[in-house]
Length: 194
Image (cartoon, rainbow, N blue to C red):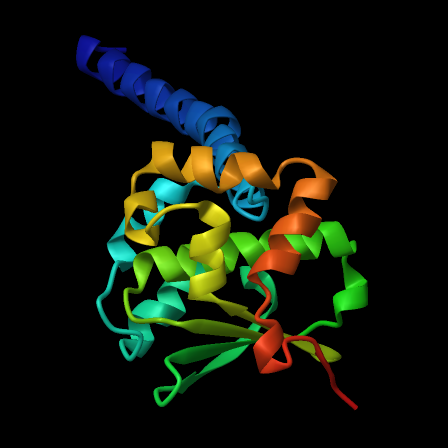
């Protein structure tokens, strides 16, 4: 066997070994990290808020932006469409699930988190109507701002968001208080569907 053939065999073996390492070790680790990250994005307490900055918009009428923002928020796997009501600056976000499919504390935490995120990143959005198969909730910008205790635009910085939103959604009593404060009672916020 010539020296040239030995080099070819060595390179082929090295290539096969490289493919085995990449496919058997590296790719599964990357996929596991990606799966873990995606699972974490469903929990408001660890959701990556900073990634939402690209969805900042002055106008709720930017339907594509509103859609992409909500697809990046917790509960995105249950989304079932949107409807905009420009007369009242309301975005209706539909979900294909009953509220009984989740613990109420978990659902309320997600709705407060998602509504606050929508208000922070979309300047003229005044109400978010979450429509589930069995009930609807309306959350208002004004109430969210009162609950946060600051102008919502200031929450675009992740540190401010963590301090004034995320840390106020840890304990069950905090979640209940936040939800009851932000739900817009004047709009008949909790409406049972038939």
